[in-house]
Image (cartoon, rainbow, N blue to C red):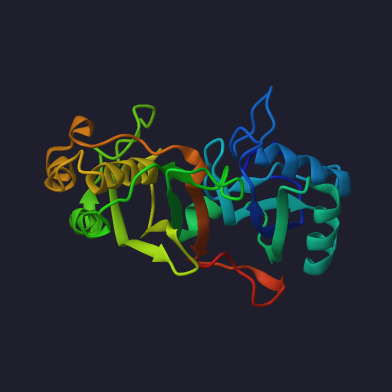
Length: 275
């Protein structure tokens, strides 16, 4: 089998990357025929170095405008380059908004999405009536102060293993909607009291699940949504019980932990982002 998108092919080795990117200029991670995407840019950079390499395979399909500090990406090749060489060579070919921060060896056909055991997303809120050009594209500006205690309290019923069918966009047609959330934390940034971060950690996520959680928590914090509605939506499975969907700008895929982190990594201590 020689399909570049398939798990099997003629390649002798695999490469596993950790990638950080500013998602604002791109139409998401997944490749599209008429738009700039993260996968498309990575494909181009890889093929500049190894013309017969496979397409890249990501652990998470981030939406347009969503950022990442610890996306995991794999591809297959016959080219023999040490991990440090892949990091340096790929970064020389990629646009400045995309950076490879780690490389390691892997088995050919390694699929990061099937080996992800933990993901951490971080959403940034900017609570101010006045815009800040240094926060543009990196946050959701809320023109009022939010009740963080109410937000944290409303989030607690979501922690644990539940059926999250209410917390997904209409385009998600998966039948398996059970997910396990390990943590939802609403916290202030110490360096800027206007900035609030919502950290969501879990094993797997559905389409726009984090953005629906965040949008609902913001509506709770603003007094527009009763805090009990999140737990009720969890039990009833009804999206209509929840609040709005947060915009993509403030969302960042901070880290993905895999059950196989590859071999001979460089840098040795750089695996993913930290939340």
